[in-house]
Amino acid sequence: MTIGIGAFGPNAGLAVFRALRAAEKVGTGAIGGFATFAAITGDGHAVFSVTQRGGAATAFTEGETTGVEPWPNFASARIAAVISSGPDRPGDLTKFIPIDPGVGLVTGHRIPPTTGTNGKPMSSDALERMRAGLSGADAAAAVTAETPEGDCGLITIDMQGRIGVSNTARVLRRPDVATVLRRDAETGAAVGVLHNAIRPHGVVAELAAAVALETMNGEPTPKGFATIVAGTPIGMGDENAVICDETGRAIRVTTTDPSVGLRGELGAAIYLASAVYLGDRLVGRTMFEPITTIEGGRLVALSGKDGLRISYR
Image 1 (tube, rainbow, N blue to C red):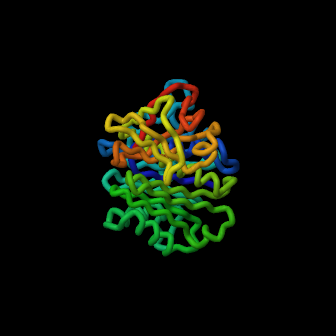
Image 2: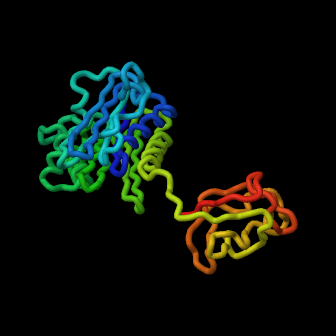
Image 3: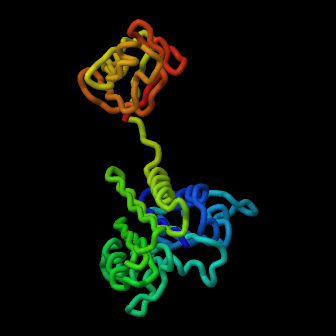
């Protein structure tokens, strides 16, 4: 039972929401029932949204409408988490995610508030240790190590984005546990996912993490554009590249693929991530690839047009 997702980065609130929604579309088992969403907003407040049935589809509403995306202050939060499982959990659902707006938050799977060997709820104990100065990563590892037979896995996130993802020895012995921690070195975004009793267990965790990271990173912003028109020469070269003059107009295209560079077949002559040169300066890599028609060593159509602009980053 349960899936826990924690995220740090731009629009982390929206990220955990979309990650759970994606997991619900693919996964079967203990999912789609109760959900507790929590976030630390940009102005330093803790916010929750909870539901007993329906998961992501009913956690946020707009009047009588379900299936809407989170409130703006939740969606834009830089630290956010969710825990979800089957329906109808007893008591206050917010207890499943201890949170301190000045410190961070804790989610997880199995039973995060189960009592540890020191008599404290394990999830709350992790938050206490973060208050005392431990990083999120160190707090999760310490709490789960000290109560190896506790039925608990923790995801901890501190205000610096140091995420801990850790299971007790008892939970690690289960055959249905999935554990994922992903970071993006370029943006600093990070996401942790834990779940059990949800099938297919490896795929669901990877999917949730990928959706969360993509949401936080957003669409890449182009650095510029290269203009390619019908009649541009194409031939074999040492790399896939678009060579332009200083204005960004393509002079020639090179490819390592004989099917387009030698035989001139229909295909992706300008490959994804091809090098873009302005003169002799490498300025970026192409962000998409048109389907090209080639005749006599020249491009005659690009995605059915006689010219187009290709973005690069």
